[in-house]
Image (cartoon, rainbow, N blue to C red; front, side):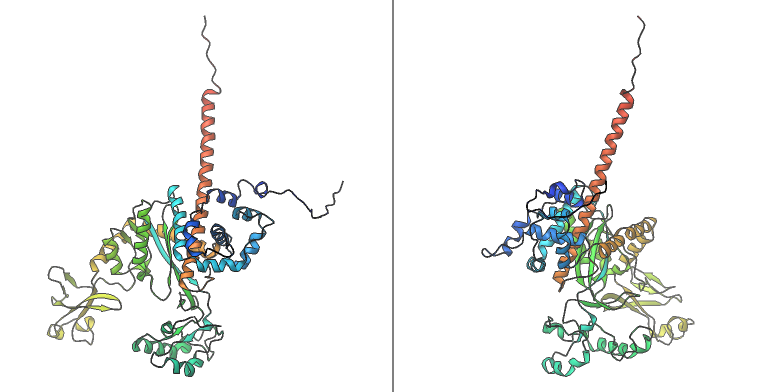
Length: 509
């Protein structure tokens, strides 16, 4: 007989979420292992003693985690999504007739709580991973990637000279032509002032002149408003902490730099930090390494090897890692040269010997582009009638050699990188940290920073990394449970094969 279903709401109903959410549901299993009760004590100083009760700290953090687990970066959409999911309501501790917090409450609470609270939760989840044996600690892979800031390139404005700040604002503001004017300029006066040197400004000016000629194939380059933007001459009034950065094949955008470290055993994130995107990766390595080593030491783990790409290469970093007793597997940057071809270095007397037998002696130590170098020169008379002068120094009068002070550190690192084990470490780095970044940006809500300021961006990155580690932990635990169950069954079948079919032999009387 054909059925015909009619829907009619009941005035009274008996309903329990615990009966509707399956035992193997992800959020049900996550609720069983995730204990964030320590947040009450940590967050108590940031709330008043009177007035209406605010959102439960555990509920706030669980809501944030759900957003990154479900790849939702909008607080408004997050609340809508959670209200439609029975398993998420059960995870949060809400019944079907309870109203979830207002979406703006999440934003305000995220701004209220300091960075250290988010770092403590991240460390707490990392400790859970360490207890389960997911983190070895000895080998860490480090990498970084630009993350889109919550600001548009159309809102950029020109920086102004310090001496004429107030007068120059009225005169020169029209030159920046912001297409999207912000409601409020959040940049401090220091961020609005030009701090670049004249040489740097002249380089930018020449780039700007050639911009339309060299970039004629780029969309919008023919527009009169097209301009070469730089952090030295422009800033964002919407998000002053965001910086202009670019990667090959991609457009120039306002970004933050996300720097992460990943353990090589089970790809657990061991460190994450938001940095300004206008600096090179190698300028952040020492800060990240100190923080990572301290965290792993508290977990009882020994950090011995660091894997990274050529962006982290510098003599200062190699020397720093050696001092910290950490083996570096970082390929040298393409600009590195151990010395000129055909020249022999005498380490004891500190000079270079040219192919014609002339000495290139040490003269001075100089800082060039944030790199400390030793400079060697020949005498003019030595090169005057040299048969290879044209090929060696061209139209110059003397041979000049500039070599980094950390040449020996480079050579030791390069020897490790070129070894068979070093090539293996390169493959391990590529298969460890790069897929993690792909997962964070595509599936864990880190495709864009939905907040303003580097402090808030750091909170967002810690939330995304915490959600990633939780997902890894849940998968690892379920896999171990299945393995133990299979081993139990196998053991039972083996015992049964020994004793279940045993037939005693009767001896004749």
